[in-house]
Length: 141
Length: 306
Image (spheres, rainbow over the protein chains, first blue to last red):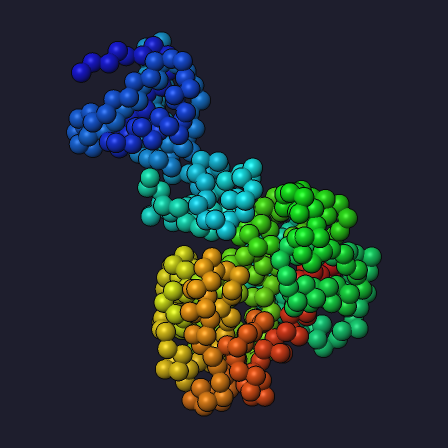
């Protein structure tokens, strides 16, 4: 299967197979006017299967969102058809307005205008806790 | 940003030890502190009812020569008109030098601290944290035992919603050689996150049981708690669990002669009134300690040295 290469934009590579739609949703890629290609289950020597997203426009990417969903993703910046930069994402220490606390007793449940802040509490288990009420949110979707 | 006390872990062990030392000095030399907070104002914002915590904060500030303002229920504040916690606290921080707040929602003091320009003290946020009760408990243990390490403490009752338990477990986990015995109905066990963060990560030993009488002989401290009606969404669950543990003189017969019985109060019936006469009952002394440690805390957060 062939997908045209892009001239100016971003390629998100090494996405764990099956997570590309989560990224599409969390990065609000549906709001873009340009071409966006989601390529699922691409064969990979390293990962077995992987997903790739190609975005045919230069844009700011929220690295915290990417790191939260899958910290193995690489972000390739393409200019004039050439790879000019390759960035690796990390598990973010803090998430702001990416996920919401599900504890009905949390102040953010009754005052939704507050920033939803989560802090990384366990790097190995990828566990985040609500900064307000300490309720845990596992990284997995 | 002002210094706050939202969670007991905001204070280092050294700072807690300093607060205890200040409280001890206040107990010994109250006159020395009687004008320490002259012309300072404490606002007590209680969005949820309280007797001890609010009055002890007010008494503490008055004993330091300061003054107090505030409200004691959400219905007598602009919250009733739909004002957010942040806006209420922002407003009050224009009038007061320091704020103590209690709120039924977990994390409300953290939200308040994001906008306040004066120190915020969490005086209880739902079933989450109650750090000044923890300071009270630590001062009481220190006064009863002469130390904050090397003992076995049993927590009994509602360990799930009991915020005083969560904070005290976190605080004590930083001291040496403390064994924890967690006594509760299965439905009211200590939350997993408290066990993981405070105990498992630090390799601290603990046992869980539903049977108070079988473990009471090994305890140096017994921390009783009330099953709180206001924390249940379901009245049936509350009625089924509320009388799970009732401490009586008979049950104390097998306890150590130097056991210290603590309770954050108010009690309903989990400690029989007959136990009050037992010298091991430390909970009324604990109430008194609450005022002194809050005096020490107010001084610290206002940066006042005596």
